[in-house]
Image (tube, rainbow, N blue to C red; front, top):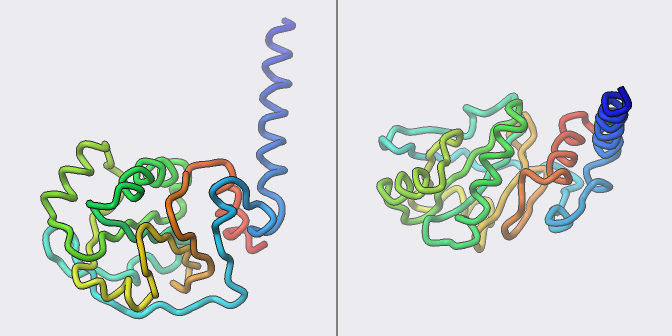
Length: 182
């Protein structure tokens, strides 16, 4: 009986701590890697650029309108990009209400992307490419990885330069705060 009571109490404390962490503004909730997240005072529009999927079909970020988006610029040759990709998948699994959208920018061969996704067991994220770096250039992405947080209107509200653990409690709390409009 004591064990059951302690288990219930522990669960309540954990849930209470997570709820407390989710209260506050995104800026107040930045911790760990999220301290690198620059939050814009005014949302920034992104250029409408054609992206390609793994079959060379044309795609657009407009497909994700209505959702909060974690837009990650990466490349197969970028070691920090490869390191953070599994955390982006875990974020998508933990927060299915948002869209985690990795975009391979520059020269990234589809077979190389597919091989990396298979090796890293990335199954929940789309394969999208920006082969001429048009989207990356228009968004002033100067190095990789760079991750943008887009509001449901498709405008950039925050930017993180470098890699991060996107499934961390801090990242999830920041994204939840954005969703709640705090």
